[in-house]
Every structure is written in structure tokens, then in C-alpha cells.
Image (cartoon, rainbow, N blue to C red; front, side, top):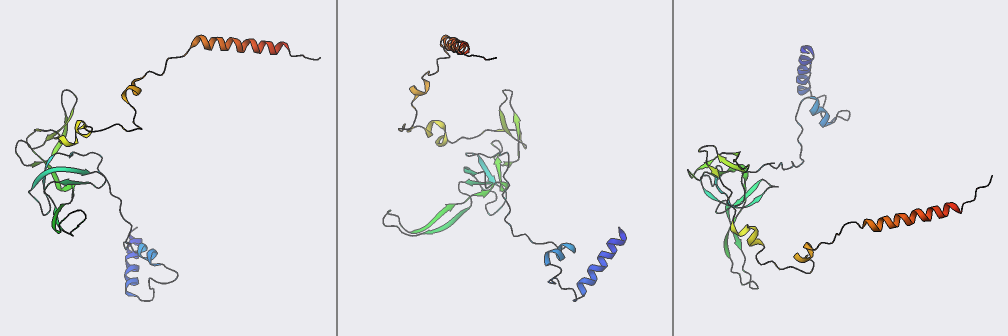
Length: 221
């Protein structure tokens, strides 16, 4: 192995100094030559976003920024983008956008501030006891409920579900459409069970008909 490695290093050195073996030679392609001499080949393919299987941050949580231009600021999570590993936080990562005037919508032109999402790796939950950002872990109560626990103080961080997104408020003004199933129809009992007397009668009639057909058969020697 030492002989081969030393021979390979010497050959690479001679190949690099010599101009008699260009990489564009017809018998040796560029990719093959570069891989042969341990030169990394660039890959221009787009890498796929790897999402996190478990999220400790949900909508309505009080979080703080631990990296970036808004480091040290705190805000409330307005939306979670799980496929992009990003969160939208109130008052964080604001960018200025110039808006044109729209006479039809009665909209004035000017400068508008828009909130943009932040990567979840730059965000940590805020400890309700200390008011500072902290790392968290999962734990279980005596009832079996899964909760988030602060590693710094051991305080339970409850999930702050916004009242706007609660089940009650989301269906507050909902009106059933023509294709919606009403509650009376959904609770109606339509299955009455099997009628075993009817099944027994049909089976007996089938046996009688079969015996009748068998008597009509004629077998010749």
C-alpha cells in the first residue's frame, strides 16, 4: 500500500508539471481525470430541504432571536412553515417595500414594512420565569401529557394557543352548504342488522330447487 500511495503521489506530481497529458484529451475525460486525481467535482444540483421530524416551537409561542440582525429581540410566532423550517415572528426580520398607489382599491402609495420568516435554528423559546431564551426538552406529567420543560430553570412552557385559531372561533360563523351533511342525517341509524329468517328461507328454497333439478337428470349406461 505504501508503494502504491508513493507511486500515485509521484505520478500526480509529474502529471501536474507535464503539459503532454491535457485533461481534455480524447481518451481521458475531465470528470474521470479529476476523480482519478482526487479532485472534487462540483455538483450544481439543488439540495433538498431536510425538515425536522419534531418541532418544539408552535404558533403563539413567545420566542427570542439568538442569531442574525435581530439578535436579542423577542416576539410572538404568527405562523410556522414546517416544509421550509421557518417561522414568522411579529416585529422580526422586517423589510421595507415600496408600494404603488392603486386608485381602484383606494390604496395610497408609499413605503410599507413587511415581516419575513426566519429560520427556526435562529429561534429559541422564552422561559416564562426568567424572561430569557432557553433550550428545552420534552417531559411527561403524571397524567401522561407531553410538555416542554426549560433546561435552565425547569419551568414548564405551555403552548399558547391564540384565541383566533381555536376550534370554537374558526367555526363560529360557519354555515352549512348544500353538499354538507346535516347532524340529523349523520346520526340517523341506517343499518338494522341481518334478517336471518329471510336468509334461511332463501337457502331452503335454493336447496329444494337443486333437488328438483337433480331428479330430472337421466343417466345412460
